[in-house]
Amino acid sequence: MKIAIVGTGYVGLVQGVVLSEFGMNVLCLDKDKAKIEKLKRGIVPIYEPGLEEVMARNIAANRLRFTTDSQEAFNFADIIFIAVGTPPAEDGSADLSHVRLVAEEIGQSIIGYKIIVNKSTVPVGTGRLVHDIITQQIKNRGVDARIDIVSNPEFLREGKAVQDCFKPDRVVIGCESENAKKIMQDIYNVLFINQTPFVFTNLETAELIKYASNAFLAVKISFINEIALLAEKVGANTQEIAKAMGMDGRISPKFLHCGPGYGGSCFPKDTLALSRIGRDSGEEMLVVEAAIKANHKQKARMISKIINSMNSINGKTIAILGLSFKPETDDMRDAPSIDIIKGLIAAGAKIRAFCPKGMIEARWRLADSAKDIYYARDEYDSADSADAIVLITEWNQFRGLDLIELRKNMQGSFFFDLRNVFSRSREIRQLFNYFAVGQT
Ligand code: NAD
Image (cartoon, rainbow, N blue to C red; front, side, top):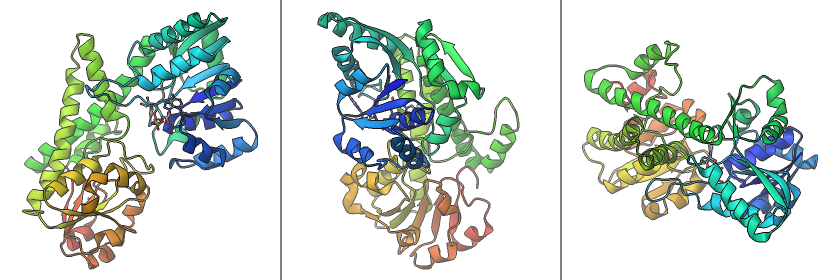
């Protein structure tokens, strides 16, 4: 089967690589020339564990190729996956300009029958919008071309994207064409025979499943973060609360870790977009909107907790451990570290930051604050002369830190562990003035 993937970001690239591993003939298209040049040379432009190896194998087997030429991609493929970004617009709604543009390009190029699969996270109704844009272009050209539209939302987690695509919890396919349904089943045949659950439904339901899933997880995080704020006030321990809550099969222990608030390329934008879809449909998403509000409050609380605990941070140096929005990714989109660092700088602090993979992106995302941030060589360099350490992202390599070495060249002794990595360590309390989240 010949497949074109439009957009070689975290979703499109991983999907393209995995589908080629499933035996498909895949051509990945991106308008970013530098990215495609790298990919052609076998260089993965993002940090995603395990991706490079599978990609190299499939390039060598000639099942995986890359191009910037949309005509080439759309002529080659029988099935076209759209995996471009849908960032938040000013009003919080999903910005569909990339999706619209791709639909126009498809409509201007194709002949014959093509299946258009939407992998991007898009508001309800976008599948039909893409259908209308493409068919209008086909009509304008007066050619013999026909399409079926499929919504196939993606649920991969950055940092675990390869494993998630090989072993997804479920595959959601929204479409109204029996032929398209059958072809989608053939594409995912490896998963089908491995008993992966498939949900076949209509376009609108598939589109909403994605937002409902992400919003639910965001609500869960905001809920436990709210409990954590209360626990700190009343002397309770949120880790123990979450553990006991999670023992209830109806609740499950996942996504019950309190911390600095959710971030990343999906939860913030998808909760905002769902709230917008609700308002546009005359149905306020009260629970989701509360989760958004609680998330802003959580990040602000982290900043005020640091400032209040240290009395003032004006003129103080603060070491930051972890910048990416979660471990095992270089993605800094909407990372809590951005708001927290900006808040600390606004209160007069200087920053010494270290992250295993996030520093390249952090340099340009935090370019406005460049004069107040030193990017450290490692964790120990970051702590050098610092008054406080703030651990924001729980990279595994931080778990094994030599705490004595870390403390040695510090000026102060504050340690704010926003992920509770060391909350059970006695040593850290002996060496530092230690603060965890959601416990006293
Ligand atoms: P991304 O920004 O990493 O990648 C998008 C890519 O599309 C970029 O490389 C860009 O150059 C390319 N592109 C944009 N317009 C194009 C065009 N007209 N022609 C060719 N290429 C074009 O985005 P992402 O993180 O991969 O997300 C893609 C979609 O998947 C979004 O809707 C997102 O919400 C959704 N999603 C993301 C994740 C995640 O963890 N990142 C998980 C599930 C779903």
